[in-house]
Length: 294
Image 1 (cartoon, rainbow, N blue to C red):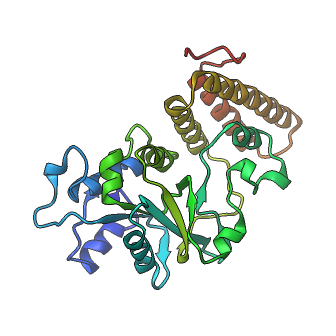
Image 2 (image 1 turned 120 degrees about the horizontal axis):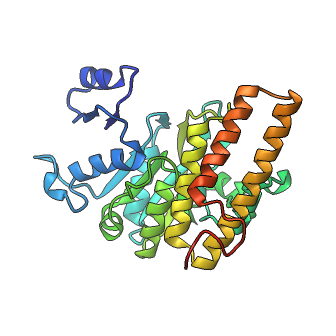
């Protein structure tokens, strides 16, 4: 599925891999909708009748981002794991960035501690379990280990687990969609594992990047949707209160820097605009009991 790429990718696939069924979407459908198009063609979901003729429904499906590269044997390692572990709903490889450095492949489901560290980072805790990370020693080992959810950059899911949980939630356009999906898969009784022997390179920029307003707003829109779907009322109210306070402080810092001439004026203005937009999404709760009914 090509999500309206503008770099000639769809044409290259059609030319060099004519045996591939290419769906070239004229619009960017987002991660969830784009993957669901492919899943439906394979026979999954309520619209399974739209399955491509002549296609046998697979025992497992690999979601793979276009900015990834499978290392030799990675696909076989993942499929072999699912064959030998029939209780597993899905699995992911160990990821590394394009420069060879380590990337976390999987995380714990988000809670209050992770939100606090996101809003008020403490360097010595950012790679800890409090921030949803699994120990590096598990990735360096040979033994598969259970995880809450894996990154959607490279994720293999068993057909029965997809049947049990349904397709990805298309209300997410960007961010948190694979987390939501794996929460439903876990609730259906199918655990997910990381298989460190399978390696995939993820060519995502891991260095500090310029602030991007649209992506920041999309991130928090998705997180708020996830909180609303899976967290109890008291926790959702507290999360929104924490986020509102954190955003207020960030807006104040950005305005102070803008007034003093420190930093890039355009970027600071984008930050302020993004934080204000997120506050509007929340209804600007200023108290733990505001902005949300139970």
